[in-house]
Image 1 (cartoon, rainbow, N blue to C red):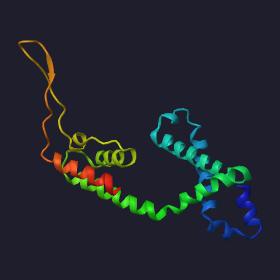
Image 2 (cartoon, rainbow, N blue to C red; image 1 turned 90 degrees about the horizontal axis):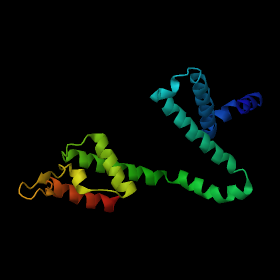
Image 3 (cartoon, rainbow, N blue to C red; image 1 turned 30 degrees about the horizontal axis):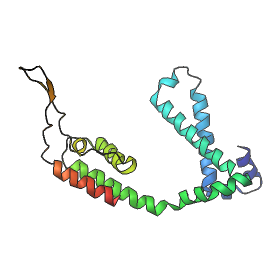
Image 4 (cartoon, rainbow, N blue to C red; image 1 turned 60 degrees about the vertical axis):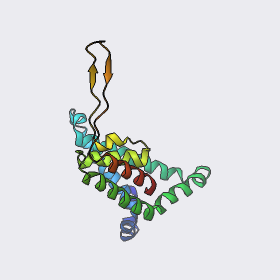
Length: 179
């Protein structure tokens, strides 16, 4: 708040409003006030909206801490190229997001029985985490346990194949190379 007041007193209010960093700081101040005010209610910690706002506030505070660390020469020289690169990744992230959403949409249209958000999370697991199972993507049924009446041995049956299992497997290979 003192920073805003200093800019206004020096006649630089317009300059303050044109920088993204100041908007970020102002948003953090407002969010801090909202969270602090909400904490007057003792039951607020159980509210999902409050927990989300509080989580966003904590994330923003850590980002501000990173910005302040850049002012220390020994640390700033090491982290400044990394933070600058993060800002320069805009075009890459745009292309990545378009391919990602195209892949989510492709899986969703294969009629696997998954909702859009489930498809989103499965493609995220495939692309970002490198964790994918074609039978899970195709939404095949789990294998059934069968008991042999003569011997009493429990066996797992082969899971039934989904009609689009091979299409989903092809999509899995395609997406893993494209993204």
